[in-house]
Image 1 (tube, rainbow, N blue to C red):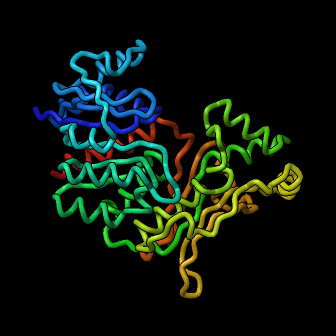
Image 2 (cartoon, rainbow, N blue to C red):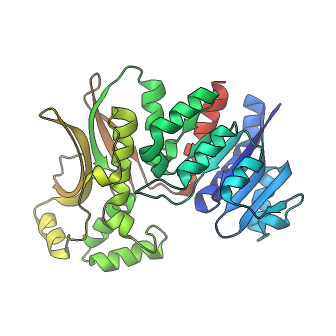
Length: 344
């Protein structure tokens, strides 16, 4: 049996879902791979930072959370009063999981957290898109130099295998372009507007069910979609881009009348992401488009996402993820860790 120690930066919905998933999978992973997991530290924005020198079993941490216990009240927990950077340096672990809010424009402070984790000898895994677009080369090179890994499957389309498909299952395939719906929130908002709702009421509905943030601008103005386009272009196509370099238009100008007009014509509005070469120039953009029933985007409903790749060997490879949530994002984190462990 091998015990794997974990440090968690960020403990919101995704972080908690990840620990619950670990607890649920622990018995099977112990039997199949001889792996046992132990939480050595948790750093949160709202509830402070705690180091558990003896480690906590995921199932114990889950049970305590569900009972409403404070992180620093758990057995053997030592509250930590320094910075997050100091916490990472002080918390001995095999893996650092970083799940803080995305910074579209700089990727910070997540980039620094991951860099310090690598320098401390930890594999680093994140669901955060910021470090992927702002520091992919730097963190990948640092990880390689240390004999470690930097993975981020959950950064685009939650737990659906996007990066790992090309890294593992499609050797030597060259991505030439892609298009799709990468922001599930705006997909749901536009679908609500098809029932006659205004944009504002559709956003309020999304907020009421926990899909849309209190400040919806990241979704509505296309920033979330743009950072995902940048991540795919950077990692899969060798075209390093940041969200500010993506031609971007959100859905604020879409009116109920425009939605109704499209519906009458048998079409739908979608916030479409595209990247590829046009006349020897690389173009990447996010913009609302009217799509026909013949388009694979037409039937992508609710909070689902879809991307179709064009490669030099597969002219059309589509990946659909239906109605994701924190559990699917958590699975992407788990998959990254297991892929690292199983490959030595």
